[in-house]
Image 1 (cartoon, each protein chain N blue to C red):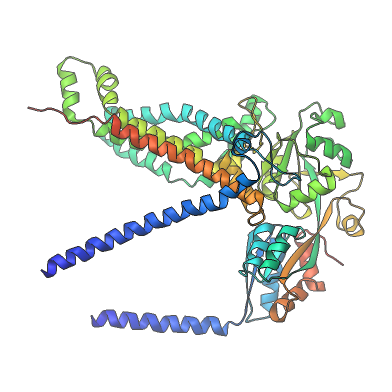
Image 2 (cartoon, rainbow over the protein chains, first blue to last red):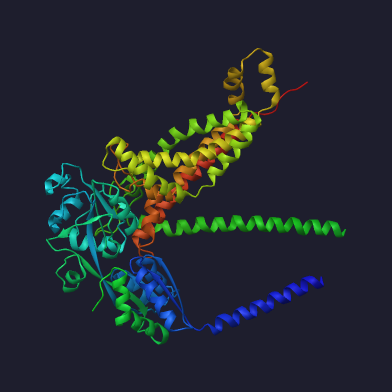
Length: 273
Length: 295
C-alpha cells in the first residue's frame, strides 16, 4: 500500500512540474487550415519561435474549410485558407460571435502540368476549359500527339480546385470522367507517371518530374504572378477572430515582414512584395 | 459473503465497460444520422441515391451518388472474384493439405498480411501497379478498377483465408475418418465432406472479406482514380463512396449541404456494411453444422 502511495506521490509531483514547465514556456498560438498554406506557416513558425523563445506555435493542416470551422469553434487562433471565406461561413461565425478578419500572406499561382514527354507547352484558357469539360479529348486537337487526354483534377472542395474553377472553367462543370486526386503532391505523382495526363498544381509544388504549361502564352513565375499578367493566381489568407492582438498580431506581422516573405518565396509561393 | 460481493462488483464493472463501448457506438450512429439526414430537405431520397451527377460545390449543386455506389460495388465485386478463390483455396491448403511445418509458416504470414497498413498497399498500387498496368495494357491510366480491385483483393485475402481456415479446422475429425473409411480419396474427402461441412464458416469469411473491401478508404482513394462517372470498361477510373468522403470532407464548409451530403453517403455505406455483417451472422447461424455422432 505504501509503495502505491509513493508512486502516486511521485506522479503528482511530476505532473505539477509538467504544469510549471508549460506555464513557463509562455504563450501558445494554434494554427489550422489549408494544406496549401501549411508549408509557409510551418517555416514561418519555426523561424519565429527561434527568435521569440517562449512562444509555442502548433500547426496542423486539414483544409481551408476545417481551418475556418476551427476558428468558428474557437479551437484555433489562426485559420489558414487558400480561398476567401464563404458567405455561409461568415453567417455561421457571426452567429457565434466570431468576426473573421482576413490577412493576405502570399500569392499562389496555379500551374497546368503535363508529362515531360508531352510536346504541348502553351494552352489558352479556352482550350484548358474545353479539355477540363471533356469537350477536347485528344492531344492532337491542341497540337500534341494522337493520344487520349486523361484529365486529372482535385476534389471539388479543395481551394486549388476553386481557383481553377473560377479562373479557367468560368463555372462550367468538370467532366465526370476526370480523375480525382486529394492533394497537390498526388497530382504531381499521377501526372509524372502518365504521358496521357494533364493536371494543375500550386506553383510551390512544381518540380522536374512534370512539365509546366504556359497559359495564354504566359509562363508562371514570381514576376508574372505578382504583376498580374499570369492569369491563374490567387491570394492566400490567414484568418483571425477580430483584429489580432498580442502574440498573434506579432506572428502575423512577422509573416508579412521582409523576413516572412522571404520564407514565402523559399517555399515556392509568390511573396507580396 | 465478502467473496460474493466482490464477485458482484467485478461483474458490474465488466457490464459497465461493455455498456460504455455500446453506448459510444450508438452515439456515433446517432451523430451520423443527425449530420446526414438534413440533406434530404434539399434533394429527394430517390434523386440522392439514383442521381447521376455529383457536383456538390456548383451553383446549383447536384447531389447524386449513383456513380459512387456503382464504383463501390464494382471494385468490391472484382476484388471478390480475385480474393475468394485465392483465400478459400489457401485456407484449404493450410488446413488440410500442408504438412505441419509449412502450416506453421503460412498461417502467421497470411495473418501478418492482414496487418499491412492500407496506405502502404495504396502506395504500392499507385507507384508500382499503376505504371505497370498502363505499360502492359497500353491504357490511358493505371489508376482504374483493375488496379483498385487487385489491391483490395490483396487486403481481403488474409481475412478470408484466416476465418475459412478456422472453419475448416473445426470440422470434426470423425467426418474425415468416416469419409476415408468409406474409401473416399483425399480430394473427394476435401471437396465433398470437409468444405461442405465448413461452408457456413467459409461464407462468413467471404462476406466479412467483402465488407472489408467495400469499406476500405485509403486504397480506393489512392488507386481507383476518382472519376465520379459510371464506368464503361474495367480500365476506367471510378470513385467509390469512401474515397469521395475522405477526399472532400476536409474542405466541405461545416454544416453545409455538401457536408450533409457526405454524411448521408456515410449512412449509405454504413447500411451496406451493416447488411454484410447481418448476412454473415445469419449465414453462420443458419447453416451451422450441429453436432456429430461418435461411438
